[in-house]
Image (tube, rainbow, N blue to C red; front, side, top):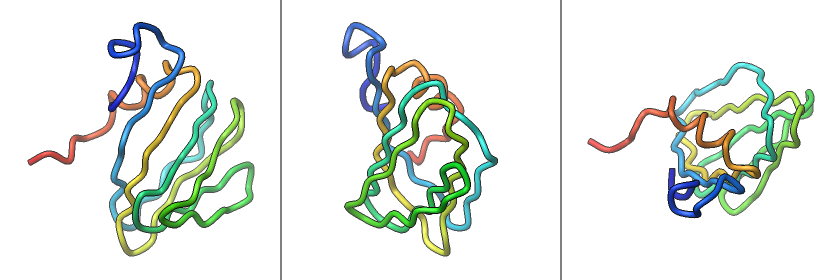
Length: 102
């Protein structure tokens, strides 16, 4: 996580940077918060309620609470900045992320 409750003093928002590997495909899921995805590099396929949006570097996607969402990548990794409002959802999700640090 780049920013969450310890830095802000409350759970109103959280933000994290994540790199998705090539040929990644998530299961369909929902969030309890608003999720905003800004693509930093690569191509990110963002399916919301059955409608696929192709996000490329410099583009933005979002999910509202309760939307059904899937995330996918193509043959190259995608690097994203993700923001959640309120932030608790993002903080919980990030606990399962694997660090890219070597």
